[in-house]
Image 1 (cartoon, rainbow, N blue to C red):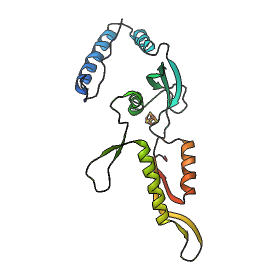
Image 2 (cartoon, helix red, strand yellow):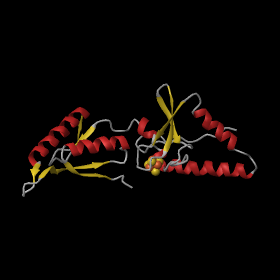
Image 3 (cartoon, rainbow, N blue to C red):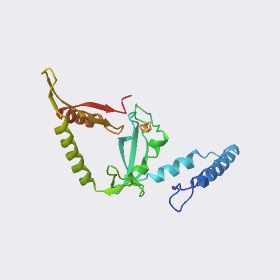
Image 4 (tube, helix red, strand yellow):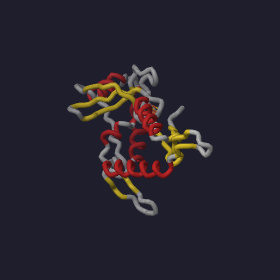
Length: 202
Ligand code: SF4
């Protein structure tokens, strides 16, 4: 017996609204519950539907990019296009489980509504502008150099070596992995930046 699943779309597209989805999901759940109560074993059908979705797909183990828990995932792709992401049961961290945010990470790769340009708001401005990534990188480099040049202290007031700046603060993010953190920390310290923090230190 085939079990159809409603397609979830965001409120900004023309598809099913969140409210419709919840209502239909409730109806589907009730129907499935009734069939189960009548003795129908739906597990093989559901497992079959799942296996069709990833049939012939290439499976690659990966890590959730969102937070420092680092839950294990399996990404399935067909012809270079991701078709599914789910929890990896072999992960000692999460044993196949994902929180709602991690479970929705498929959207991170494929959602056409994702922003793909840098949003920039100039100092004193009341509006955001779209900027290319290269422009943003150059701008960051320019501002880091300018701020460092203006605030770098070679010595303390009593003549001891200091070689640092308090004019720049570095705040890391949860999706930064160990290797990136190591390299980032080296870069910051080589610039004399001593205020380094990461919201993911749990
Ligand atoms: S965001 Fe959720 S799924 Fe991703 S690593 Fe954190 S807890 Fe795990």
